Amino acid sequence: MGAHHVEIPAEKAWEMPKSWMTTAMVLIAVGLAGTVYGFMDASWRGWSNVLIAGVYFTGVALGAAFQFAVYSFVNGGWWIGVKRIMESFTTFLPVGMVVMLLIGVLGMHDLYEWSVPEIMENDALLQRKSAMLNTTGWLVRVVVYFSIWMTTTFLMRKFSRAQDETGDAKYTLFNVRVGAIHTVFFALTVTFASLDWLSSLEPHWFSTIFGVYQFIGMFVCAASMLVLFVLSMQKAGYLSWITEDHYHDLGKMMFAFGTFWAYIWVSQYMLIWYSNIPEETGYYIVRNHDGWLAIFFLNLACNWVLPFLILMPRGNKRNPKILALVAGMLLFGHWLDLYLQIMPATSHFAAHHHGASVHGPFFGLQELGPILLLGGVFILAMGKMLGSAPLLARKDPYVGEALTHHQ
Image (spheres, rainbow, N blue to C red):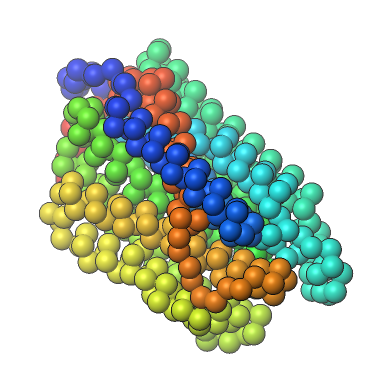
């Protein structure tokens, strides 16, 4: 349905709410203190938490970009009402690039055992993987990944904004093409980035579906973040066109893709469990001992069991309070998932090669610091980007479908 078939609602000009600014400043201040404290406590712990936070918010940006790309080339209509928010999420990518480059330049030896020459020289298996497992290649690939992501997301935003100015439907077609290209490169780059940044923390271990597992975690996290920002913006007096029917679709995204996350989680676990190959089972053995087992099951509960049960009734998908609760749970769950992937590996490395005294999971201000710091930066970056274009893509050919959306 075209925009000319419906009345376009009056639109309030975007101005970042004071509550957002205050929240961002508090998060940055507390986060910076926690980050500094983390490095003072132990450099490996500081870099581990920076890696968690960097991957987390880069994943939010990439998850939003993927949704934007897919909805574009499948000619989705309902999402036009929240398209600008998805666009704004992608502005974090340059920050993510800086974070990952800092890790590669300053924190590599605290995280990745293959980056330590003495270890590489005495490990025949790592030597055979040295074409991939080397610091220079790791850094070069960081630049390549982010260059691709920033280029395609820039083009998608550019064509979206150009359509607002001219109303020319050709820009929709342009984004169909860019979205298709982005999706192909997204699948490849996210897989390799996941292997570089996460899987190579334990370079003797491997999983054939690790990239898919990371992708779906990014998607669910981005969808959950979208829900919270939609609700926050409505509370501040914006997005008057968003109705319960849009809530329903947002709820279905969290419900469906949270279940897909669980499917991939079980698939990876079961494949390794019944094959019982030592090179694979070591990953789960570490995470089932020394106190990690409780975190292991809490991860599953937060990312699937509880959201699945809560969102199953239709009415709950249309209830903003319940949506906010589930979105917050899934955002915490994704952080916990990354924590469980990263911390057992880096603490084990620190204990065996840096003499650290580490036994089981640990939580403190050191863990909160980087995630809060980058969370505050994320709010400021996306809040500023929201002001660069109308909140509603008024001249998109599918805006009418978005405004008359019904479930």
